[in-house]
Amino acid sequence: MDKKYIATPMRTKEILKKYHFTFKKSLGQNFLIDANVLKNIIGHAGINEESGTIEIGPGIGALTEQLAIHSEKVVAFEIDGRLLPILEDTLSEYDNIRIVHEDILKANVHQVIEENFKDDQPIHIVANLPYYITTPILMKLLRERLPVGSITVMIQKEVADRMAAKPNTKSYGSLTIAVQYYTEAKVVMNVPKTVFMPQPNVDSSILKLVNRSEPPVHVTDEDYFFTIVQACFAQRRKTLRNNLTSHFKGVYDKDVINEQLESIGIDGTRRGESLDMEEFSILANAFYELQHN
Ligand code: SAM
Image 1 (spheres, rainbow, N blue to C red):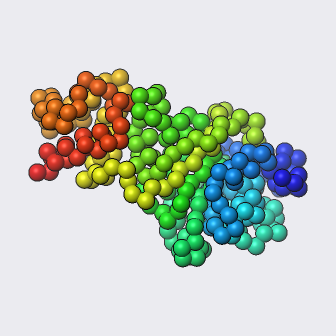
Image 2 (cartoon, rainbow, N blue to C red):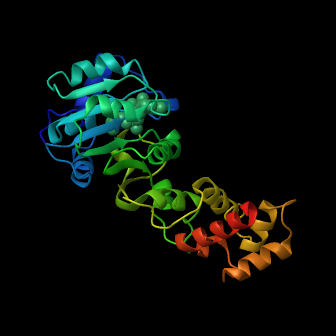
Image 3 (cartoon, helix red, strand yellow):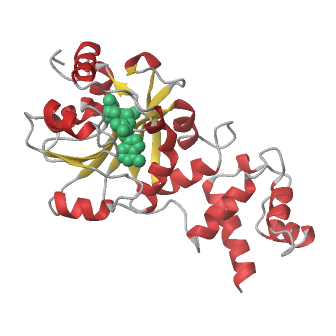
C-alpha cells in the first residue's frame, strides 16, 4: 500500500492536526494507522469491483478509502458530525462514497441499501467497530436479516472469541448461539493495540461472519429460543436443571422440568456450555410446546 493513503501514523497525525480533531472516547474512536491490517481486512472481506460495501464509523476515512478502491460503492454511517467535513476532504478524490450522518443503531439500513445499491448487487459490511457498542450493532445487523453476504469487522478479541466459540469452552455462551444461528463465524486474525490511534485498552481481532441462507436448526419461536438459551447460561456454573428452575419459577416446578428434560434425553445435571445449537433447539421447542399446548 502506498504511503499517501490515510492509514499511516504520519498522514493520520497531519489530518488530526489540520482539523484540531480531538478523539471522543465515548464514541469508541480508535483509528486504524496500519496499512497491513487494512490489507488483511480487505482481503478477508470477499469484495471485488462489483460489490457494494457498507461501513460503520468511517472516522477520518482510513478503511473507507480502501473500500472505495476495492469495491463499486461504499455507504458509510458516521454519528460524529465533526468528521463530515474531514471526510469530505480526505476522500475528495473518490466519487463512489456516500456518508450517512446517522447513528447506526437508529438507522433504517434496509432503506439505505435499497436507495444506494443495485438490485442483486452483492453487498458486504466491513468495519472497524466502535467497541462500546459492538454487540448491539452486530445483533441489530443480524436480526434485521439484511441482504448482505458477509460482515467482516474489527472488534475486541474477547467478544470475537465469544461469537466464534465452540461448545465446552470458556467463551461459549448465549452470544455464541445468537450469532451462529444467523452466521458462520470465524476469527480470521488477532491484532495488536499498536495499530490504532489512540491505542485501546483491549486486544482486537478481525471477525468474519458469513450469513447463512437458512438457520442451522429449526426453532418453533425464535424469541422463545433465545430466551431459553439465555436462561441456560444465566449462572454458568449452575446445572441446566437449576437454571431452568429459576427461569420457570412460579410456572413449573423442578419435577416438571426434570420430566421434560428426561423426555428429550438431555441430562439435567449438564451445564449450558455443554449443549450444542441442535440440543438448545430441541430443549426450547419442547418447553415451547409444553407452555403453548
Ligand atoms: N473506520 C475508522 C478507522 O478504522 O480508522 C474509525 C473506526 S473507530 C473504531 C469507530 C467509528 O465509529 C468512529 O468514527 C465513531 O465516531 C463512529 N461511531 C461511534 N458510534 C457510532 C454509531 N452509533 N453510529 C455510527 N458511527 C458510530
